[in-house]
Length: 326
Length: 264
Image (cartoon, rainbow over all chains, first blue to last red; front, side):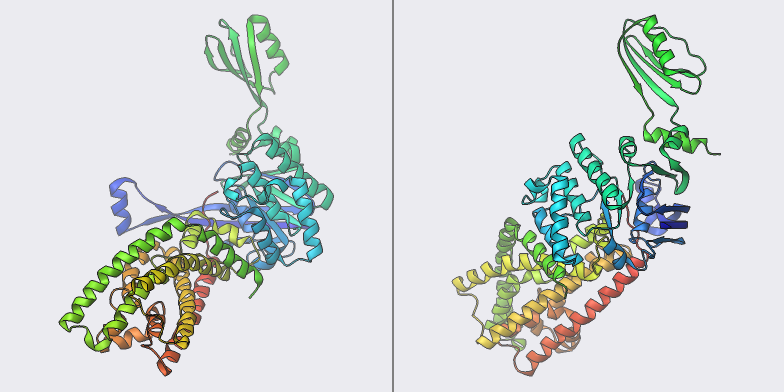
């Protein structure tokens, strides 16, 4: 049984067109032109209870809009979505009572007040059983390691500390479903690991369904068994991580630091991106050439000081995925 | 009402209490402008222009109290809500199982109560010390005007929220702010005490909501409004409070149905 079901979901935004400059500024006063942008365009997918799904796509792909539609914040212009049997936007208050949402780029905590005050406010909002609430609160404080800064005003917290508190604030009421929009954006390694660990435990121990958007492929690899990739509001891929790699992840960037110059010839599967004295950048198509082979050759023709093989970024994978489409 | 809204209101109040420097600056400005208004009005009384509407001493009380409670008159749409709409931070409010309107309203009340209190208490004490303001005519007057000041605070917060809702969902917060504000100030009694307006205008002013913001409570303090007139003034405040809340809720319901949350 699917817990989240989106069918032919559409959300359009009206965007003002302005020619820019003085002409645009004055022209806009007389007759403003608007265009319609389809942020979400005929999107269908289904997610079962207990899944942990990575929701990928470049900036402006429509990820956040989908999250907001599923959270009931936005009303769809077409199609429908059902989340745990509810129509999110029609039944917003009952819906958000049962889900948790984190927007990595916005804070839901009180800037000027201690985190503990926000937690107290949440207790009154959700009106859960007192014992359950206390247990949940203690548990989250422990898992996320936020006990030391509960009493500090939010504005004094580092981004990593704040994000852990945001996560706690979204989970206090024990939601069955969690939507996260870039929860690891801008975090340092320990904070990122704490967030990942928390999400993993929630999913594994309590069966919470999690849908998270991210630009961090490491997040996806560490957490998700399944990914959804969208661009221009359309679904490009729905499948396992291996499918994502196969979809465009067969190119590798090789960056070399050499003593003196190193001569290597371009051939099918090997593209020379830049060649300077002491620095060389190559792109290898792993379908045509084995990386080990190329590296062996490079080491034999010159003196290599440093060598890095860089897998494509999530953006590159998505970009190549998108470009591959007719 | 649910305890969450009450706590939200008090948290916003506490957060806003930290702005002490702004309160001191505001107080000094209000003292200076108060003196200016007193001089202008004194000149009018000396020339016999203003006499019929209100005795001179009552008009002086009115002006100093008006300065003390200046914050009750909306200077601009509710900033928290306008900012949240502009930046998309609104999304966070909607992720919680709360009634969006009461959530914003309770914040607006808390955020307004703090600066009002921070300015009015010291200003009134200073005015007493300088001997330019008379205490309320009686204990009854004091209690009634306190009630009405609280009602004025609620009306003011409600108007602020409504202005923010009209502004952003009607397409242009700045337009509403610039066009509407001076009219509101005048009709609330900031420029000239309302009893000094010509009788024909009085009828219109009496119906509009803005006198509930300042004029009514001030006149109760000085004993100018008493008996049935006091009752009517209080009823006027309550009726407009209910009507404006209803209007705000309507705007909220319509706005949320075609909401666009931008960014991120």
